[in-house]
Image (tube, rainbow over all chains, first blue to last red; front, side, top):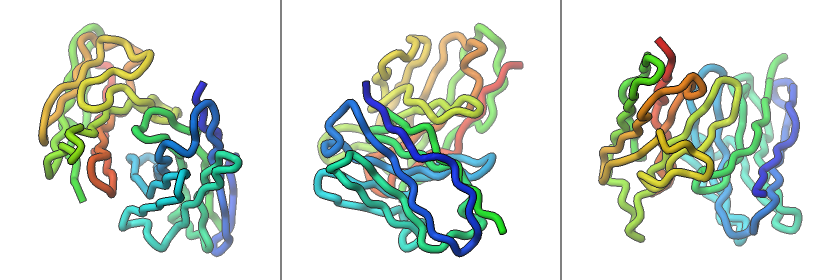
Length: 114
Length: 112
């Protein structure tokens, strides 16, 4: 069974750093693109970027370039999304998803508040 | 970026009646490999999105056959033949033909 399991909810302060994870199982992790999607409270879905774990080819949507870093460790079938300095506007649910959007993680809720 | 425009943004429907959602892209979604990477997702309240349809018209595993997709090029449609209570939620089209991949704004389906 294909599964993407994300790390748990986080409450952080502005300026703090954070790295969340997405562990794949039940399929060849290195053979599918993994994407990250943001959903701000009450809003729609936004693609942030994608990574191909097989060779770590990574692409960012223009709105997120320079704002986050996407990485993967294929030895443990895990993709990551990280921030070096969080803002209140990063408060959102974040999903990892296998291309072609067939399997989704359960979501990680990030709350950034002073 | 390819802009995906969905209509309507809200669709009140009667149980048992059909529903239809349109998705238009600002550019052709035909990939150089010949495929059209247009998918439809359903997001029920409080849940992650779920894939319904991929490559225009292919139902994903476990998706009821009352859901169907059609279209070509820049114009696509999701149809629900007979709406059931469990179909309430927000529906999104998304393209993965050209990066950055993009979503439509979402269409809220609710029961009248």
